[in-house]
Every structure is written in C-alpha cells, then in structure tokens.
Image 1: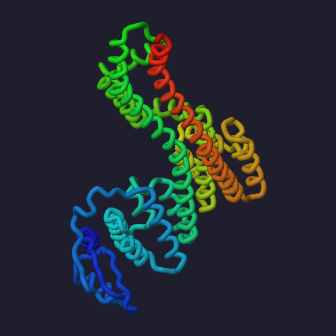
Image 2 (image 1 turned 90 degrees about the vertical axis):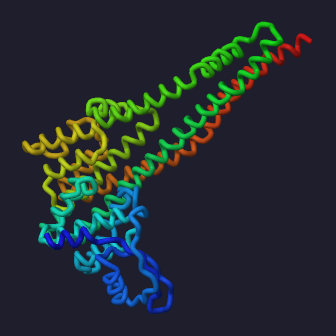
Length: 406
C-alpha cells in the first residue's frame, strides 16, 4: 500500500544538463521529487543544469494510443532480452516516453509488481490498454519462463497489427476526404455561383435547356435547404457511428456488408485473415492451449463474421474435432489457410504455418492498397472532372444558345 501511494505521488520533471562527453542533453523523468531526479541523473553521469516540474497542462489531453503500447512492448522486450531486471526496465521505459499518461500507467503497473503482483495480473488491472490477448500471452510467458521471447512475439504482433490498420486507413481515408471536399465544393457552387447565372438567364428570358434547368432546380434546393442538408448528413453519420458502437446486431450487419464492398471488401477480408492468423500464431507459439487461444483470436479478429465463425470453430475443437475440419466447415476461410493449417497439424508446426499465412496476407494487403491508391487518383480526377464539367456545360449551354440566335 505504501509503495502504491509513493508511486501515485510521482511527478514528471523536465531536465537539462551535459553528459560525460560534454554534450547537451535534455529529457524528462518520473520521480517523487527534484532531489530524486538530481540523484538519478548524477548516477547516470549527467551534470544537471536545470530541473523543473512539468505542468499538468503540458500533459493534458494526451491519450494512450495503440502505438504507445506497441512502443512500450518493443522497449520492454529489448531490455528483457538484454538481461535488464523487470523493475529497472519499467523505470527506463517510463523515463524515455514522451507521453505523461504512459508514464503514469507504467508507474502504476510497476507499483503493483513491487507489491508482489504478477506482470500479467498487473496488466489485467488496465484492460483499456492491455486486452485479454496481451495478458494471456504475458501469462503464458510467465508460466513457461520465456518472458523475453513472448514479449518479442507480442511486440512483433502489435507492430504488424498497427501496420495493417495503417494500410486500411490509408486506403479508405483518401477517397473519403475527396468525396467530402467534392461535396463541399459542389454545395458552394450551388449556393453562391449558380444563383448569379440564374439572374442572368431570367433577365434574358427564353426557355432553358433541360440540363441547365435541372442544375438550377438543384441550386434552388441547396439555397433554400442547405442547413437541413448538412444537418441531415451530420445526423446520419452520427447515427451510423453510434449504431455501430451501441448495437451489436447493427455492427454485425455493417461488418458483413463491408466484406461485400467492391475492391475495399477484398482488402478488408485479407486484412482480417492476416490478423486472425497472426493472433493465432502468436498465442499458439507462446503455449496457450488451442481452445483458449481461439477465444482470444475471435475477439482480435475485428469482424463479427469471423468472430462468430471462430467461436463455432472453438466449440467444435473443444468437442474433439480437428482444427482443419472445423475451418473447412466454417466455409469463410480461404483454401490456402486451411491447407497450411492441415500441414501444420500433421507436422506439429501449426504456429509456423499460421505465421507464414499471416506474412502472405499482410503482403497481399500491402500490394492491394498500393494498387488501389494508384487506381483511385485517376478515377477520382475523372469523377470530379465530370461533375464540375457537367455544371460548367449546364451554365454555358444557354449562353451558346443565345449566341446562335443573334
């Protein structure tokens, strides 16, 4: 209890000084007071010139991201492999991290370890940052005495998952931004530019071409109801996001629908299979029993369709069905994965085979995203050019008509 209180009183200090070579150094340190900071730095051979407590506002609003956890895992794995004691590794990792929220989190985990709590149990107290998969792998490493190996596998897993998510976001973000920008530009033309042409055409009299009249009607709609249009779109997006978050049934429908999207669905499917295989490989290699591993794999799949299929596979495996037969029965996994799992089961190298499958589909995602990016640019230019060109032609048709009658 006393240790926990001491950890809670720790604060972040900013320091400046010079090292043994005379080079200027600066950074931050988590400690109980300025004296402790100076003592720690002096033991590191740093001549302290300036120490000040970091204001709370400086760290306000900074959240702990998946990238922060991945970086921490990689640093901890590296230090454990180098033989650095666990508590010292936590100290070094916390001091080297720029995010005060991460420093606080690691301080709390370290305080629990100092009171005798196991590392996996200390992580389980923070489920927001360390999920069941993370904790199960760490627990397996503790039991087998291979913590450095497990942490290295966990770091690789986190880094791979971040890379896949980054690829998917980059594939979806570019067209989404272009669509939004195109809508805003079109709305601006409809609200501010078209009405000026409308006054010109009304003053000249005569019947307008059908295309021009249609654009004018759309312009009238935007001018009169622009606030309702923007409000409706915003409300629809908010309702969709909340529906995905709060309704498991609606979220499952969206997951199934995304897999059927042209082009994007194929990328999402490959990314899901890569994540599924990578998770299973990491858990099985760490010695987690297959049934327990499948439970974590289902949660880490990130898609309701694959979650339901994996839960069904888990129940079949628990009753004695081999994994290959259960995968075939699910009918959503590619034949390559099923065959590799079959070879892995026969040869006793299931974790290696799943790792190869994950590598293959991660490369497939990379290639698909690169191909999509090169395809989207000219396609979007054609769509935007066609949209703006149609509006321009619609506005100039009456002018050409008036010119031909003169």
